[in-house]
Image (cartoon, rainbow, N blue to C red; front, side, top):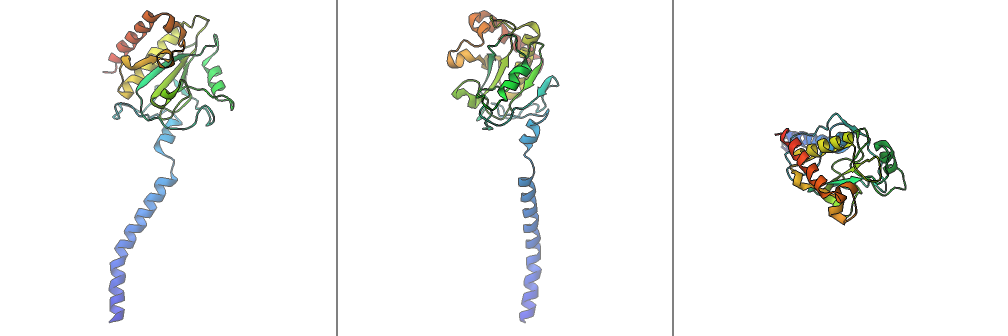
Length: 221
């Protein structure tokens, strides 16, 4: 009788044991595999948190050259809480390239960085994953995407290639985060710093820029 009970007990435990084993294997697989965001942010696919979590795409445009800087003082790896605004900056060092600025961000002693840098030829380099904080302004780093823009001279005015890429990238970011052109702001609007200089000195040109972003956004509708 005792033997019969043991046998019935074993038969009852087998399905439960199988379920537990399957669950253990599944959990192990999830935690041992790289996260989706880690995979996406290391290549062309990128994902970030915006006002609209149902993003239309997670695929970065072909014109974006992903060169993520290393984790350090500038890129901490801390996650964004949301994306409420896109902030435009200028590099403040006339004549330098997007690659120059990206490489500067990557130095061990550097404490500043941005998500993107746009160069004098219109090239765009991504430096920080879009689900992480950059170090471009102040407390607003936690909920903004930052774009640094190169310029040829002290006036801070962007050349045509650079300007066109800025409009294109900003519109793409707006479209993929549920933002409007009115959600695009200057560094000046965050801290009062004269950045980007040309758009601070020429408010009308800033309004023209946002109108250009608005027009570009229509193409995504």
